[in-house]
Amino acid sequence: MKVKLPLVICLIMGIMGMVAYYVPHKIIQDFDNEWRNTALRIIFAFSLALGVGSIIRHHLEKIKRKREFFKYSYVTLISLFLTAFIGLFGGIDGKGLIKMQIGKFNFDIQTIYVNMAIPLGATMFSLLAYFMASAAFRAFRARNFEAVLLLIAAFIVMLASVPPIARLLPKLLYISEWILDVPNTAAKRGMLFGITLGVLSTSLKILLGIERGWLGGK
Amino acid sequence: MKPVKSLFDYIDKIPKDKALLISVDYTPDTEAELQPMTIALLRHAFCRKIKVGVLTLTLLGLGLAEDALRVVTKEFNEKAINNEDSIIYGRDYVFLGWQTPPLVPLLGMGESITKVFPVDYYGNRTDTLPLLKEIKNYRDVGIVVSISGSAIPMWYVTYAQTTFGVKVGAGFTAVSAADYYPYLNSGQLTGLLAGMRGGAEYEELVEENFKIKGRRKATEAMSAQTTAHLTIILLIILGNFIYFYKKKK
Image (cartoon, rainbow over all chains, first blue to last red):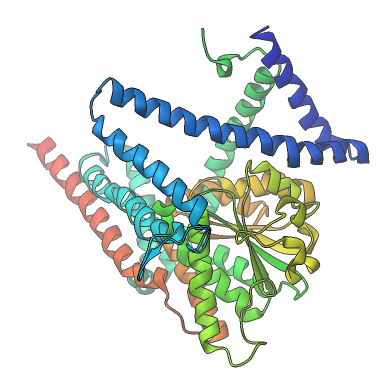
């Protein structure tokens, strides 16, 4: 029952989704709309509660067992509860149930997002620049004919997106466009066909219960 | 570039009774590259006085969309002489917010936008907003432009365009833009903004055609991009030179 019930639900939901796409009858479409707008939202709301519960449990466990870097778990949990409190009771602009302002110092959710989340996210992404520079020096070798072709194409596309070079050599822009429009599109199209066929077969296997990895457990 | 010009030309020809729907589907890590695209699109729409709906399919996009709207509406309202020129919430634009799961707004907006978003981001009932009394579903939307660092614009192509026939445009980071040229060539994407350069070109087109002055962050960042690209090319050449020299020895 523990295995059969989820498989049956998966099959029924999959068939419902497919039928709604192909059958334009009002009853089917209304049922599909109602299912999507009501039931699916409720399910996802519960998954949000599940996600939050899971992160709290993971970090409490880490603190209890004093695992490596457990002190950062305190930071995670305090940030989680604090921002949830500010978001729930402060409103979007800090003028909700509780005013999120002390004098001229605002700490509403939007201020926290713009002044903390955006710079932190941008910083993490910026670290990639150093990895790119290191990879460019150490890894991009013209070892064979294909590697040389790849490097030439990469140089042309990179130089074409550099305004001073593009202005000096206008033909470079056309060559770059051609590389993206023709060989790149041809290769990507081939990959997309393969990926789509793979997705189709995996989806069918999941719906029919042949693929059971998503159930978890043994 | 052609993909940028096609998107610009299409948005430039949207009838006044249709809306531009902007889906802000990126996160703070790609904000530097993609936020200028959102700002340029908003400037274009407000200059043309076409209605704008903004939503997001990712939670982290909410703050970024709010920030972009605040910047552009402030720009326009500072120069406005009368009520007609001003950008007024509810009349000229709405910020619908975020809904989960993504399938709900993607398919639900084909029937009714107000049913999917009964309240907007600020808590206003959407059926009371003047804009949404005219823009009811995808049939009243000229084009959906999804700006994302991942494959979210493809969700609009797969679900919204296939089922309802709505036009889709996209803005991507430069690293992922090459993956979506097949969709551009097949016509599934009306236009494509690829990376910082795409954003800078769109800003240029908006300023050239509407003679408006605003901060052009993508254009400003082109000098940094130039330095970065030339450095990478130099490092590749240097690395290969040392490799072949050592090999010869």
